[in-house]
Amino acid sequence: MNKDLKPVDYGLEKIFEGAQDFLPLLGTDYIEFYVGNAKQAAHFYKTAFGFQSYAYAGLETGLKDKSSYVLKQDKITLVLTTALNSQSNIGEHVKKHGDGVKIVALWVDDARSAFEETTKRGAKPYLEPTVEFDEMGEVVRSGIYTYGETVHLFVERKNYKGTFLPGYKEWNSDYNPTTVGLKYVDHMVGNVGWNEMNTWVKWYEDVMGFVNFLSFDDKQITTEYSALMSKVMSNGNGRIKFPINEPAEGKKRSQIEEYLDFYESPGIQHIAVATDDITTTVAQMRERGVEFLSTPPQAYYDAIPERLKNHMHRFKEDIQELQKLGIMIDADEEGYLLQIFTKPVEDRPTLFFEIIQRMGAKGFGAGNFKALFESIEREQMLRGTL
Image (cartoon, rainbow, N blue to C red; front, side):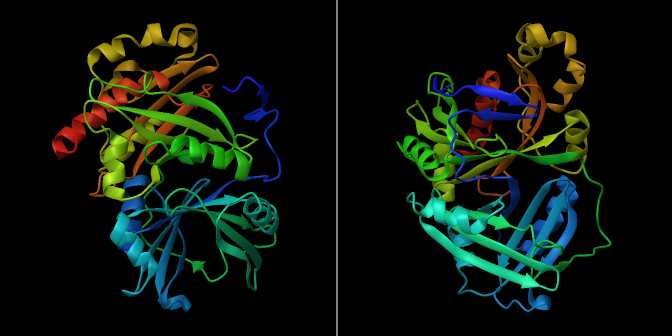
């Protein structure tokens, strides 16, 4: 952690003294995927992840070039967008990258100010401040590019009472499987190319006023075969956290190199979503067909009491149940956390999800890095990409 930054706790938020406040972010508004078939992708996320139908825009609402299905689960909003013709930039994005995250939309109180403050600090514009309105009010959106072709949209919706955004209609469906207990977006991890991590760390510091509050080098994130480096960026109130990964030299190809090969540019590697009951959430997701990485060996679970140390008196989970589900455990000075990672959710080995339950811990499971990456390497060996 940067010695000049002092973490101060205000309830659930960690405020870093010295973090710049020219870009107040209220939270993650939505995450938009560009996909090959939004209707089918929506069915998958409803069935497997427990998302609910929320809003729709497409031919029936007057759009001619794309369709978008909006799904919700508690505070998480996903938008799945597909092209309706071969000339679409959306289709070109999918052709190059496969299904993936195009837009990370951030909730702000003033989208015009957010655009002005970031572009004057060097951000490349994606969308000039634009007012969209219907009978339910207005939404102001603006946007900038970050790494690769990924975009941050700033969404100001304080004067809007409608369903999602103007131009969308409520999506009523007879098929809405029950939720699985996912609550909110904890963090989103981006992969960038060789020697690009520090460039993007500086970009987030200079352009968006973020701070780098955790760093991991290739000595901490390493296995027998591969290594990577990572730095965690956070805004001032701690509601938005973007770890940034880059490859490091190893005997074989790391998961970051594999991602870059198949995504064909930097981009979002995984989305971490929080739950209050990870054993129930993961058990339900497994029953619904979600595939997770392989379970760590017995020795990993035998060592849990030693790893938790001072937090063991608070630990209420059944270790055998955690082992059965493949859930990992880590601890820091402030508490412990439980986490598990899905396999990639499409055929290209790119985007995946993390399910996380925080029991006071503020970290990202550093004690699990070796076990996690060895599990990923086993999948890479099966794919022939290690």
